[in-house]
Image 1 (cartoon, rainbow, N blue to C red):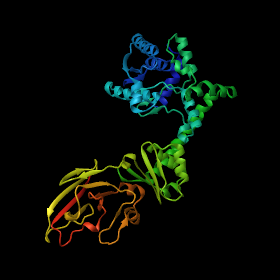
Image 2 (cartoon, rainbow, N blue to C red):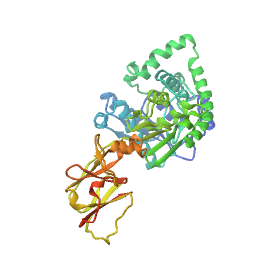
Image 3 (cartoon, rainbow, N blue to C red):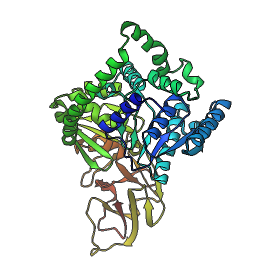
Image 4 (cartoon, rainbow, N blue to C red):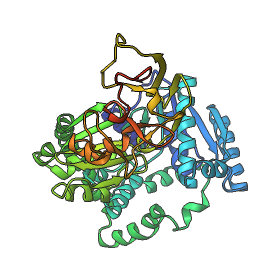
Length: 450
């Protein structure tokens, strides 16, 4: 048995943070290392119904097989139901163009989430302890972080819980030693070739020379900051709700005036932009550009951001992908999942009703040459706005009607085979193709949006 004081400490931590229910199955992530072995034994001895999950990533040759065999025997000895999964981590990382570490994490947690549903478990218990939380605080501080990064690892994040955050690595290893309980050691943890390992093996030992209780000090500071952060975040989240609006499901607008009026403008901007995968340094650049000339662009891996007069506009990068479709005859043509065009050709006479809605254009078929093309605007595009005689740059026209840069890039045009613009889609037709008294056949194109 693990010692009573040790078990009591964990039990009280579980209760104070409302982590686990004794009536529900708890799924424990078991690697075979000291931390996960200790967590499994602690929950078992505290009377929680548990099952374990072990992932073999096939990254360390015989060590990977050793770890799996250890976990299988450990569960058998303690009467615990084990679940095993095998992954080709290297191939997954290459396929998704991510690091091995990120690939293993994604595979692991995807498997855990699905297994939790399959067995009806309440939580996924992972074995992070106090040292892990302290290392996270230092790592975030080194990299540069907002206030949330200084609160360490949280005891509960949805259905992922961490019952060992109240104990240190030394306490865990001492308990297992007293219990004569074996565990396996990942050899990569003994090499200081990664940021976290450098902190663990180099930086923290140096800090302990200054303050032997540095772990406790940092952990307590992180806990206090956690309380402050929850109150602060409540204010920031409320401000964010009022600062952000959506034109469509995927396009967001942030009021610059609301940002400036915040109790903490840069933190509010950070809170909003981090969800669009912008880095802290990018967010700082955006903040410093709020009073600059409008038109500055920023790109994250998933989104593009435009500072436009009194608003910040954010949209997915997919919106920037330009596409061209050709229209050779009548029919319905799908431009993308949101837009399609219905093309009709009909006889025209003085009694024919012309649709003058913005989403429709009616043109004299004899004045254009098929096939037609629908594409995004290009630099140098010119057209003669309906009702006018002189030509105008499309970009100037769109500026005159106050479209922002993203809207200009999204603007579609309908052209004939001579690349003459017939219609600024959902906007204005070209005067050269207007219907007149000589028109015999009418081309009608309707833009249909979902």
